[in-house]
Image (cartoon, rainbow, N blue to C red; front, top):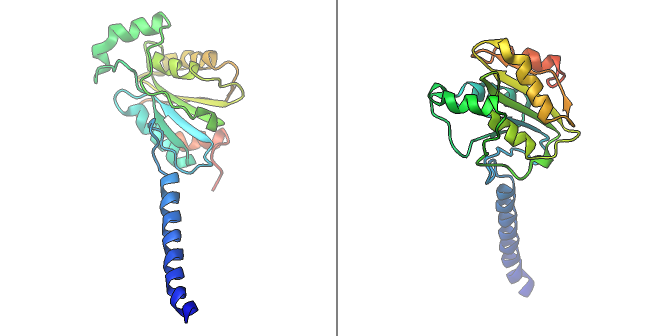
Length: 200
């Protein structure tokens, strides 16, 4: 009789333990961490890090992440730029021409988790936004693969911007960069060409 009485009780205890394990698992796989990186699955090794003032670069970044299944991280300046970058032209020109390093407001702690890092920026005054250089120089990126991408009104300074990213990540491996005027057109073909997206 004692055994029959204890059996339902033991089943209730076991069900309760299973419920706790399930809750712990959901907490461990939270999609967004405290530093603003969309972490997705724990095994992800690719990150799309980008700075975007008007949303154009963000659109390209999100398309890349969607296609390759990468995590995303938005670089933000501690002193925000104006919503219309033309209103900040003097500041942006000063940062670009004098190679300044505006502070990043939200540096993530887990960049070592990634082997491949896409880095996106608008081209401002002939260069990437300097806050992107601050971000890159905040970490030891030796041996990691860095893949730049840019948005711009005209591609006149595209190679100069690529060279700047290569300069601040000189110990990294580099793949061919991507540039776009205002859209995500060409992103998928580019990813195929650099071997980051398998053929269907």
